[in-house]
Image (cartoon, rainbow, N blue to C red):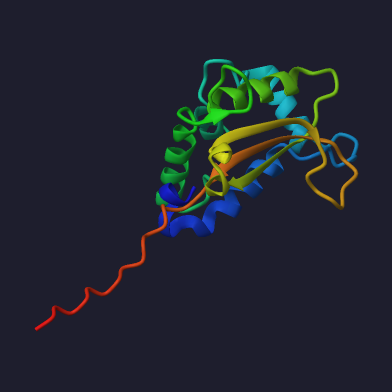
Length: 171
């Protein structure tokens, strides 16, 4: 998110945490509505995630990052909007559409999985400048829980070439 967040990069992990809490596994407490169980109920009632609707719009409806600095939230939404131009590992879908489609399918499934959002370094190769959807994985090593994993490309500004001192002119 570096190019978008700039000096607000310190908030990236907060946005990630809020997303992951919204789609977290059920706590196992009878009658508790939170995390994934709440998202399933909200999806059934309001169809928050819908094919053709931007991922950014759905997150705004959920007020993801609402308590964070307004400028950081604005930049986060600019980053999310940029994912419409990003590729994905889903054939024929851009990053934004692939995320929405994966979430819609997952929440409608007979046994929906919690969703884990993670960043990956877009600058490590040209293939990493895309959203990567993994239908079933265990991204948290200490939890025996399968997740739908959505990995979003994050990176800073292109590296600046080192400036060399001009050679002194011969006299």
